[in-house]
Image (cartoon, helix red, strand yellow):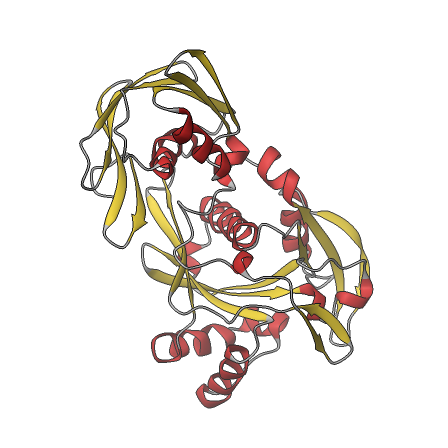
Length: 339
């Protein structure tokens, strides 16, 4: 993040960046515009007059510089001299929750922590699934919404101040990732739970099949660009777990392989877990629940998921394993979890 307190891409050539000048004072800089000075008070930030072409989305950088580093900060108020059109635009974009005008031309913009974390702009680096209009399909006898094709490249990026590292997710690439995928799947501790050992050719065929199936999104997780994990994110309505509970149209599930042991610290575990859940909820705002179905004897993972807010619905017998069916609700994740 260079020397910036928070840096957020606006588009391919523009960024909104926060630079701290001194304690409680700084500048919000948008590429191509004069910097806007701000002064911070308790749960309140006072901004200078905003120029007429100032984009409301840039306020997310200022909010992010606070909410990302202060896990106990529940809400912020931005006091700014601007016009009502700007304020309404910011509200409709989901940047703020509400506003008031204590005096003509001066607005107080209110934002809750969970509102900020549900805005995709600071985190998603590819178009999200939520753009897909309702349109129904059948997979065998399963009726479900049409799923968008899997994007290529990076889809999510988040700087983690507490670890001084950056976590990112990208769609797996055969040329780039097949060797690592093959090594990870053949690890003894992975093979026991995944049952996916094989040759390079077999794994290439397996991944090629996933690329052709929009039900599943195969992802590589990285810390500071170094691959360490493989994730499969899937839509539950088309999955084999659908008959075992009251499945919703946009429920999602996931599987994980941690391939590099040096990234298995407790801090990094919580970091990638929170970030992966965050990505799945952001990728489609209609997703209200994330499901887990670890093997019933994978007690370590089950206990961890319960500690992070997953509820245990029941145990189920799948064709290939007996599993614990677990559920994480969107409201709990954003309102109770310290992202």
